[in-house]
Length: 348
Image: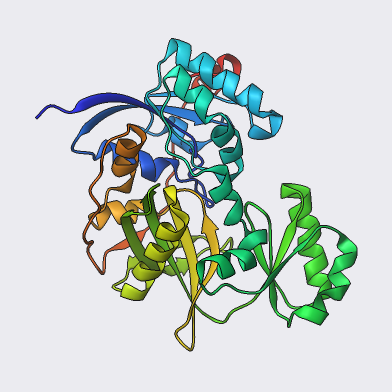
């Protein structure tokens, strides 16, 4: 059977010590038994490594940051689409999802398919809304509070015990042992991500993660849990192993069926010492370690493509337990002419 030709545009090409999900998502698509994909990389910076990696992207276009305005980003995307037609768009960063979710109908009208959460789903799983989320869906979450002013830091000792977690609305999480450390992390996060800053109860235990895909009707198309084996200073998994844990899968099903989640997600969970599962974060997109799921038998990027194209997808029924991933660094050699061409012409 010949593979179907398709053009897929993706973001998240920053495969550094804080990797974006773009490269592993592309690897999953490249290994698809059904699609012969032409990959367009959408880069925010000229030095995103995946731009220059062999057999990863077929062509790269520079795009403006979402912070430059939704219209600016979408107009650039439509400009690219006009000369290089896109079948499916897969955004891979939290911070850009607003722009693409709000513009879903515009993209659809232009012939670009997506499979994204709704704005309501995106909002209710925000870190600042986690306590309400826990009550609504009957899941355990740590106590948390959103800070919008620096003078609120002094009052935290009324509601929290130290240490506690200090988190940005999109990214970054720091453990703080006293008021001064909270203040330091608060300033760092607001400078980078703005307000609110979320303060969260610290739960002792083992952190586990689940990558999952929901079909928007309440069904879990696939889910693979893993435990981090090696963690970088930034808290990112540099090695991990798939787990046989029915409780984690049941919790994932409960969240996806309750929310009718649409698209990829990552559940960050702490299994406390009394064996309780506490959801500490729900990331609204495929995580950077998704290639472990592909290696364990669930090609979630391929399934996401099918869902975006409006096709029916049968849920995966299992995965291989004890599969490991280990990241590694590599020196990529390219020519400065390539970099200059992308920087000046906006495409490569």
